[in-house]
Image 1: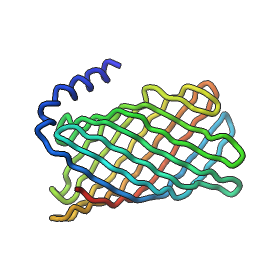
Image 2: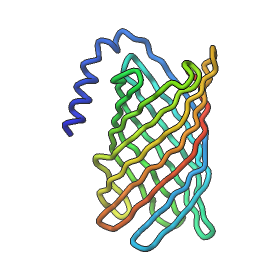
Image 3: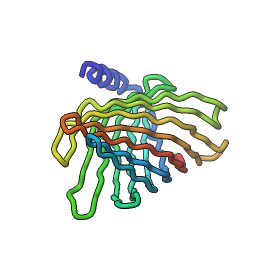
Image 4: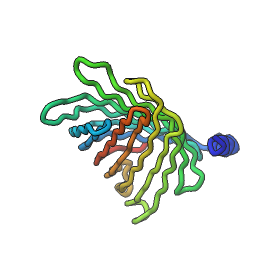
Length: 209
């Protein structure tokens, strides 16, 4: 909690700088292959499928807000489930290459004939970027850790964390951009021994306004 207070205080301290800046917006859409693995005690399940997503970001000065939403269906030889996932994050650019974030991240699995199973985690995260070819290609790594969370079925407190890494590509003189990324994250409900791990490789195309 102390770290969260420090981040919030730093963000508030930069308000006068942000007030002098203009809003910038970015939008993107894409999709990719997602693999979800569940484990409860000795029982294991693996499902995979395509998940399509959209995102938007708004930046003003050092402040940034990011919204992402994805939806698809993952299956195996015997079962299938719909999946919906999303996040709403508020961030502060502590350095041109480093952004600190806080906000909720949720994933819901829908199985026919059963109630939805939703993982909800409030997390803190950091994103670091490095230029490989200035103005053209940049690498990034994002790490996050949930500090509180819940599972809807059965009702449990959960923990979790994850990472994402990849490349951002831009066309010189154009607002178009692309991103190739690999993501892995895991949620854990210790009291019932449930663990769910999700991996995805995604390709996103977007534009800046």
